[in-house]
Length: 101
Image (cartoon, rainbow, N blue to C red; front, side, top):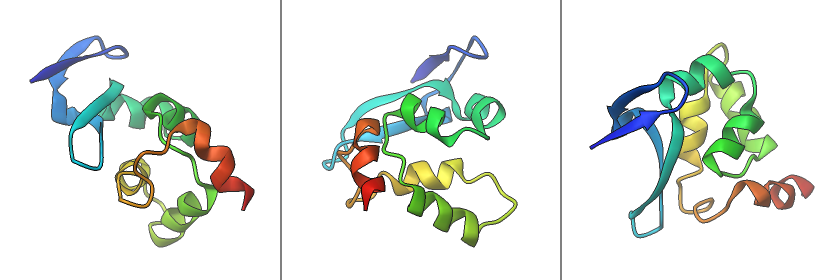
């Protein structure tokens, strides 16, 4: 299955996009931009990425990834982590809840 990337204006395989699943592993949405465009255009703005993907931004989790994997772009790792059971079902608007602690 292919999807259109709004930034590079090309059709790409669905696996080239960040995907979001329910706890039952049903695809509920995908990003509007391909992974490559996100890395190239948003790599310095994790908040914009989280907003685009509608996943929570949790400062503590982002900091941990950057400590364990310095000098790398950790966007994919962060998005994958937000698909884990403890974070699944939360949205960008829930970021406030996680960062109040």
